[in-house]
Image (tube, rainbow, N blue to C red):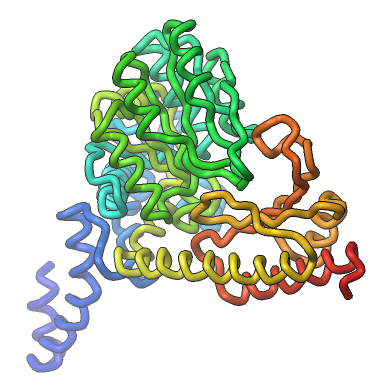
Length: 441
C-alpha cells in the first residue's frame, strides 16, 4: 500500500508535509542506529526505543498469525505482560552452542543482538578503549561472563590455572571455579593505607606454573587499589599468558579506561569485562565483554550453552540508546562531582570524629577510619536508616584484601547516577550514627 498516496487523498498537502517532518524527526535516529550501528550522540526518547524494539520483535516468527507452529520451542508466552518483560523477543538470542549466531525463527532478535553488540562496542571505544575490535553484550552477570571467558581460554588455549591478585570478593572466584580452573591467589602488600597487588609474587607464580591465565581487577573498594594493568599486560606479553580484566564498574572512570587502553598498546590484554548495571544503569543481568582480538570473542561466543534470554541484552541496548553519548558524558561528569562532594563531606566528618580518610587512590569510593568504633554495628545502623551500599569492615577482618589490615573503616561510593541528595543524605546519617559511638553528639 502506498501510504503517502493514500494520505494525499485524505489531508491537504501542507498538512501532509508537516506530518512528514514530525514523523521524520521520530524515525531518523532509529534509522541511523540500524544503518550505522553506533551509539547515538543524543539520547533516544522512550517512544523511539519502544518503536525500534517493537518493529524488530515483530519480525520474529512467533508474531506470524498465519504460521503453523509445531516445534517444541515456538516463542509461546502465557500472557502479554510476560511477553512485555522480554520486549517481545520471545525466541531469545543465539543458537545452541553459539551465542551470536543468527536464529532462523528470530530474524528481528538477531538484528537486535547485532545492533546491541555493535552499539556497545562503539560505546566502549568512545568511552576510552579505542583499540578494541570486537564486543558482545552477554545476558550474564560479570562473574558469569568471567566464567564463560575463562572456559573459552581453557578450551582454545589449554589454560589450567588462573593467577588472581587477591580481591576479597566471591563473584570472580566463583567464576574461576565454574570454569573448572584452579585458582592461585597471589598476595598483596600494604603501602601506607593502600593495599596493592604484589607484582613480585605474581612474577614468582608465573615462573612456577604453566598453562595459566591472569585475572586482574580495575575496580574494588578501598583500601584495595586497582591492579597495575599495564605492568601485568607487559608480563603477559613477555610470557604469552592470556589476560582477562575484570573492569566491573570502570567504564564510568576516564582514568581507568585510559589505563586499560594503554595496557592494550603496551602488552597483551585478551578480554575486558564490564557490568551492565554498574556502568549503564540497567537491571542486573548483563555484561559487556570486549577484546582487541576478534577471534577470542568468537571463542567466547561459541562457549555459551544453548540459546539465551534476550531480556538482558535488549535492556542494555535500550540503556545505551537512552543515555546517548552526550547523556553518558554528563553522567560521568556528575560522578566526578559527586565523588568530590563525598570526599569533602567525609573529610569533615572524620575531622569531627577524630578519624581520617584513608589515603588510597580510588576514582569512585572514599574510605574513613573507624578506629574505636564498632564497624559491624555502624553498618547495620545505616542499613536500618535506609542508607544502602556502604561497606563497613572491622580491623583485620576479611574484606580488606590483605591479612591484618590495621584499621576498621567504612567505604561509601559515589558511583555513576548517585545524586547530590544521595551523598548529603548518606553522609548526614553516617555522622549521626558514628557520633553516637564516640559521644560527639
